[in-house]
Length: 157
Length: 166
View 1 (cartoon, helix red, strand yellow):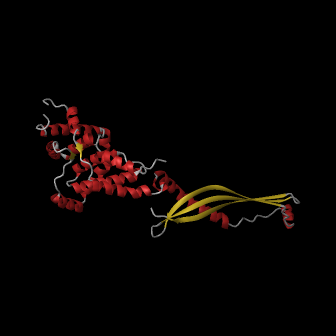
View 2 (cartoon, helix red, strand yellow; view 1 turned 120 degrees about the vertical axis):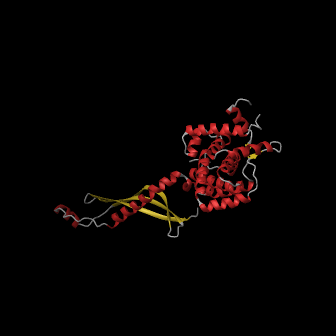
View 3 (cartoon, each protein chain N blue to C red; view 1 turned 90 degrees about the vertical axis):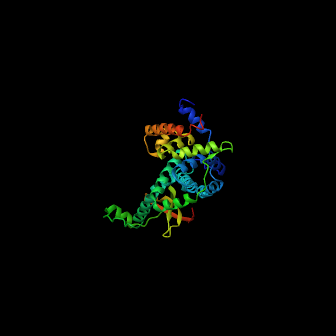
């Protein structure tokens, strides 16, 4: 090889194969990779991480909203005379409809003070109450949101 | 959602890329033990970052590079490495037949004489199969610098190995 040919030299160098990793290193590596692979998919994916970042403040907000709606006292307005007359007579409900709709459902993971994770299933419902009084020609409708949080259990991952 | 690699996928991935990672790590630290640790840490970190997919080799090379710099900065690690290097047995970097051993050791010793900046680029290009763009990302240098270091490194290596490459 009188004149230097980089490509030919590179090809010659490539004929030497790097030594494989020692078998003990290889096996240890596979063993250490194993716990990561056993984790549930929803915890390992970046999508879940992004979703978790969003769902934690959203859950807190939903809980706060539910508390406010549940405990806030309705504002008392002076009723007009006709309405007062109607209110004086007892309501004779001849048809009552109860309905509920599932608005959203998701799972959230929180951590206990000692660092252990705990998983919750959260469901946001919309409850509807419809009361018919055919005698007085009244239809009362009440819609209220409700948040249901169920702890699913402790997980180790 | 991406398919989770099986144990067989990981084994095959390690068989294919592990030797290149090992050789590159040997260019960055002075003992075989440190190199093995470095490879393990880098693969685990890269695997965690891209889970559940298998990590792309350029990411692992980049992680080895970064972690080697961190190690070099750590005084305690350096002391441990010096102790380890003092007791380290001579290690062959290449997987060779008995007939090729002498030539491989000659090249290994020539490679060890190159400046680290040349040596790492040569190792990544020749035995890591990376492009200059990937090398530039892994080492944090411009692609043109990677290409010129490679050219100079190859020329220097050629000078040092004239006896075996006739």
